[in-house]
Image 1 (cartoon, rainbow, N blue to C red):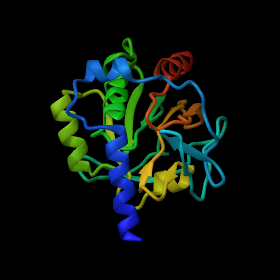
Image 2: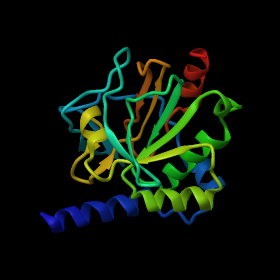
Image 3: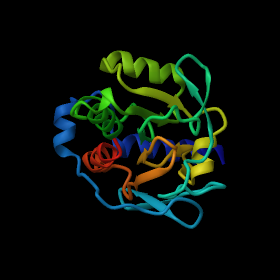
Length: 209
């Protein structure tokens, strides 16, 4: 079982690529997937066309509250993501920050939001350790995004139906919640190596202000 997991993770890294490539060049080569899939059991995403099943005890849906989940901040503080502070939020979910697609997705959230970061809370969620998230933010010079890690209990993945269990990673997704923590926009990207439609999510957030 452990051997299969190691092979799966190695495949993910090889297929998605290494984060040392120049961001601009990578971005030019990455497609934007405007489609979406349903969260939870019975659904799947793909990686280079190979199906990866989603799992979880809950399912995130537009029009319903974002499920509660305990995450860890970069300071190792416990954060309940459902405890909204009365702000519109864009929650960018990535499999691993140390891959080109996730790198580009996070930079777009931070740098191409057209001033939304002054009015909207920007959050990135991944399975990366808090220390790795902190390193990424420092190296990328990103200070307007809150990074939260689901590494401890995988609650965010399980409670939203976004967990890719064989890889112990989260599906790529973008979530917009209103000031009352209701999900108003959701895209779960069908193909892991493609970018989400971040501009559509930002437009949805702007309409909630």
